[in-house]
Length: 389
Ligand SMILES: Cc1ncc(COP(=O)(O)O)c(C=O)c1O
Image (cartoon, rainbow, N blue to C red):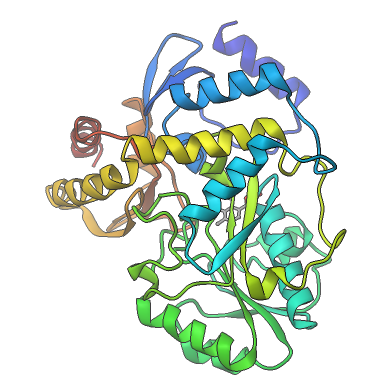
């Protein structure tokens, strides 16, 4: 089918809820995708922060092909070798205190379950989240999202959500008390425009949580699975080496096969009994094969080391463009801040067949490339940027 036919069918038979680029993706490889019209695009948005291992990485394709031939799915009513291996591998790369995984299907679901576990563990209801944070669109997660207008889309909101200012410990101290179940945050606020905070902020949050018996949740749906060059933000020097009680994951975790997870410490898991949490599809075999193969591919191909090197190279080369006011973020989660609105830069890059992301800050262009992106591919971005500005 050509693009016009595909577009007509999608528009006719799908609810009109997404603003789309005028391309139809047919296949992908590494940091590249090919369209229905035979055009080739450099994907520095990584399929919406999902394809950290690159598009259709052969190790992952093989793993899910082999699993599909054995059995596609059975729920948690049965044990499964591939689930056992995926859980073991995920916990093995997690910060030391996080010893168990709960599998679900998406980022919003991981956050809902994390908040529920925090409420079980503390027997309290209040949750503190932050201005500029995004946590998903289901009821509890959207109620925890104080970015833009999202919360209003989720009316009526779940009660018990309050908002502190990201980076401001005093604002957290004013809200944190012995009725607070959880403090939840994106450690780098991606959608807000790749907003960062200092290691001291994270250390301060850990202290406040310890003082009041509050569960600290890091929403690592974007920062997890190698994105910053560390397996996770939690426990890394970016976080002042403190560890969250729960990390939530999705996006890159299955390289495109839908899967989410919560990684939890003993304090949290000790309070969960049979039937407290559940989901039909969580831990399904196809998703588990994708999780295991994703972690193996990142490790085998040294992608975390690669993205750390790419970040330094990219930062160096971006200095050549004087219209850039600042560069935010870490590893493969980068916000390029321009001195003015960068909508036209985003559009011109797309016309030059380079996909990047926007953010809710009109001056910030977001990059979330596959972790296997090369210096040569970064050079293509720099040349296109020089023309676009
Ligand atoms: C930080 C963060 N948390 C949660 C979510 C929600 O994930 P999902 O769309 O898989 O529900 C997103 C999605 O963009 C996200 O970026």
